[in-house]
Length: 315
Image 1 (tube, helix red, strand yellow):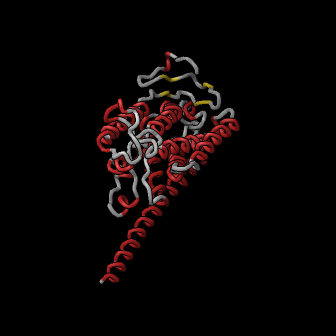
Image 2: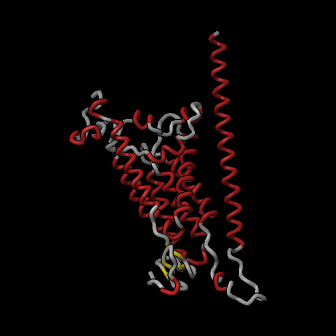
Image 3: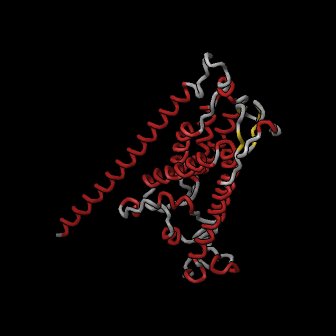
């Protein structure tokens, strides 16, 4: 990374010389590197939430011993459920459900839409938490440094909701928790950022191949038992579309063109294909949300009909 140019220093961060090169891409002049604080705060919030979950869980007091003894009893009420019940070193399913896990019946028929967001901040165990937070640090800090906390935070939260939405539609007999959908949203945003800013990458094929391999490996993990791959796919698709909307970079030469004489033709900030990606992604997001609402209303109506049929027969 290039050193700071004193003449280009700005109050909010460091502005580097006209262009600099990273292993896979080149950044336009006057590119500001933001200080990453949101991603570390999300990590702290998730760790704090997990501690609160374990405090509420209180295995020594509430465990009835059917699945074995609590694990790590020296932690007191923070000790984990028996491994036969939760092999990830975490709380019971009932505790997670009480504190906001995604559960289809409560969401659709209990009108508890807040679970689409609350489940993103819950984790099933220490292993689950560590895997997600390490991934968030490696993926999120780089994006926040380049695009700022507002855009990355919006992608993270909206992708988490997108993952929760798809999970809720396909998994209706068990609960779901975790930040995996939001994390896959960041991966999806990285892919769309690569495509929409294709011209600034110096090693295009290598960057695309590396990112695709990472995405495929992470999706393959979802095939394992008890892993919610629908949340992964929903989060990835949402983040992929949001990346086209939130992460386009100005094309090369745009800043320089602003200093041309008044009668000279200035270059457009974004290319035509970036605008096309933006519009298409926005339309697809609206269509996806509309389909979800229709499916939810259909599910509620079908449940209402079944209940009334059963009631009429009982009478």
